[in-house]
Length: 485
Image (tube, rainbow, N blue to C red; front, side, top):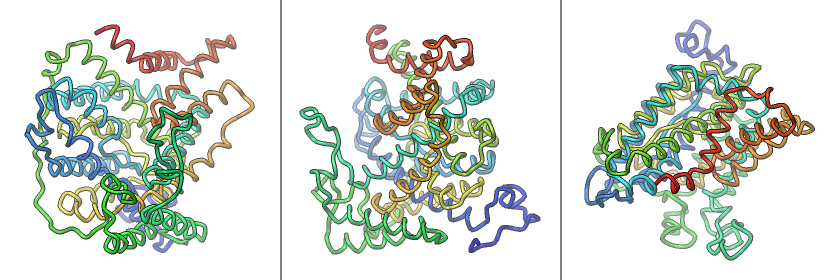
């Protein structure tokens, strides 16, 4: 039984979002939206740290200044995430939240901005988003999605489950990189020195155990309760221990220091509109620009495909072909998000797999996305409060949801090598390379390769040949770039 009964079918919210039809309730949708926000609110803090300290070809910081402007990047990040997530909920009625894409922002900061101005770099994001939108409106992106075998879509969901579980363990400090990994065959280890140590790690472990206990006992709001309780515990721990951030001292918090904010300030939207569509072509050259746009576009194209498949599978919303409802609307909003992120000067926005935490809490409709988006908009003015939530208190949700998504692995025919091997590569390479796109690409290329090897090339959908070929170029982008430039 739900703590809040299903909304009456005559209620406008129920009719619009089909809450009762999808077996959900108003309470579940609100809780799911709040949980999704908590598990991805870190982007409001992390995006400024990634973009804010990198300089462009002129030595300027994002926004055109001579000093980092983290507050403006944070405000822009929250604004775009809020508006586009609400749009996803209202237009596509899908429990999927959007924000600045991790990986894409780092690519912009460290590979693109060094070759042009920040405005030029953001202009490339806008161009990439427009191209993606054209592919959606022409039906190409949706056609590719439908051409993917259903079991490969299952593998994508499972791989993403392992990927987000790894994100949770890494962000919590349970899994760490070995500093001298080049000198050893082991790239990662337990904790920072082969052992679990520090109060923040304990906060994560206790939070995970609390979340699991509440979940197996079927306590409503288990994920949300755990995050709130452990955030309060973390604030007390920080007040007593004065741990600071791990980058500043051993045993500190991974990203956010859980302390009550000293002050609140008016938002600064200095990055909005800071983009230039054509400047990069002169500074970096046509070939370089085309290769950069191609890399951005391919990552955006398939990240969302994998994410919406995983969310739809976890919410039990996929049809017999493994396609979620209103797939084309989801892809349109996601494409618009890429454009909006570039136009706002905060990098391409894309769908977030952390939305699975809200689905794990019971979300099944776009109302949850509306709740998440509204909280992002509130964050523009209350970002110091969001900054109180340490990743150690929030990421246990990713581990639990990773387990839930892993359960879909039984839907793969492991005795059929033509699908089993591509599925395995898809699942394994997502966490091992820390990239959804790489996993999907490996699955597509190996699937096409095995069809050829077994003399069944004619069975492969023509679009999958195109996609496999594009991924071959994607994997070889570095030597191709050096050869052409």
